[in-house]
Every structure is written in structure tokens, then in C-alpha cells.
Length: 304
Image (cartoon, rainbow, N blue to C red; front, side, top):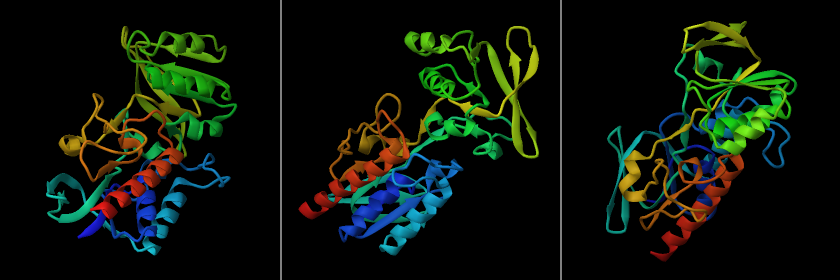
């Protein structure tokens, strides 16, 4: 029996474990893949307060070492569902484990929706990015392509246009779907070009580095390669919260319906990080959520 089980070993989940252990609570962190989450795809992190530069892997390794030193338990298992019996939560995994706890923190994060093209995964962090705030500075005075036409893609393109030599927005539909005001701002930028009705079909590389993106126009099938130094994929995020829908409560987009207090629809169940409904998904906000959720969970456990 644990005081707190944390589902997810990204920055939010590991920060929650750190705060819980410092409050002398027994903690288990369950992570289905590698510890660190999406931040491990960032080769350079330069927007975390107090640290000029580090890699995402370096950050994740440090945080994992920190929670292990504090006495947190960890297991690599996939959580399938939750079951509540009285005041005890049971966390059930695909591997057949049944872990019991007085409180649970969901920090399952999100996945970036990818294009599904050959070689895409290998280029993440080496030419393919998902976050202009995180990685845009690495492409200062360089040419980039933004794939997508919704609000997120337009916001990424507007940010990138401030520093990049050229920004090409590629949308597979015949029109942009982002809000009109963002479209107006984007089209006012002299270094931005918008290409609609066109799909990305592949990538060009040299010595393992991205050099261009292959495009095909839907109307006539014309194909060409667009030279670029970086590609920002902005076609949406995928939360993985279906297993917790009944216990936590999800909004229309599949995110856990929780505010800055990190509460959910069930007593003793909390949500932290990118998996919950929020405006900004960044390393700093994930860590902040982890702290808030842990303090709330500790108070809940103390009151039992």
C-alpha cells in the first residue's frame, strides 16, 4: 500500500513524486515508456529558470536520480484502469499488477500528432520540432516549414517569423482553419509564405540532417522539394486519458477536466501536466502542476 501512486514519469509526474517524498509520503511512479516524457526529444532546453542550457535527456536523468535518491519507487508498466474500493485506489496495469494507494496523481502527458512519414521519428530533435517557444531560437536566420493550418500552427509560424529568415506554412486543406486574426497577422509578415492544398510526403536529408521536405499538391499531383533547415509539425496533440475517463472526467478534447488546483471529479484523484485542460504546456508549467498536485494529494492523505 502506497500513500500516493503517480501515473506518468514525465516532468509533472516526477516533480509530484519529489514533493510527495519530501512530505514523507510513500510514492510509486508508474511509467509505460522512458522516464522524462516529451522533453527528452528536445536537444537543447534554454527556457527553464536558473539553467542556461541543458538537454531534455539531461533534465530527465537528473530528475529521475533526484526522486530515486529521495526514496521513490519506480516501475515501467502500462496502467490500464483505475478502481476505487472505499477510500483506496487500485491501479491496474497491462502487465497484471494491482497496486493500491490512498491517492493517485495522473500525469500521463500527451503525444504530438505526427505525420506518419518514413524517417520522421529519427529526425525528431534533429530537424523536426513541435514547439517554437522551445526550439525556435535554434533556427534564427534559417528557413523553416510549419506543417498545419490550425490555431496552433499559425501561432507557431508567427513566433518563428520573428527570428527565421523564411517561414513556409503548408496546409493540406485548401484553406487555413486558424482564427482570422491570426491569419491576418501571419499574412502581414513579409518573410512568410502560405501553401494550401498541399501534403507533406517525405523528408530530404544529408548526413542524417534534415535539408528539405517533400510536398505534393492535391489538385494536380505536382511534386517538389522545399529546402529548409527545420520542420515544425503542428497538427495537434493526442491525450491518452481514455482509461481514466470515468474516474477523472474528460472535456470534449479528451483532456482531464481539471483547473489550476489539479483536482478531478473523484476524491483522492489528481491531474498534473499536459494531460489536463490548460492554456500553456511547457516544462515550467508541468513542474508547477506536479508540485500543486503533490501538495493537494498529501493534504488529502493526511485528512483520511
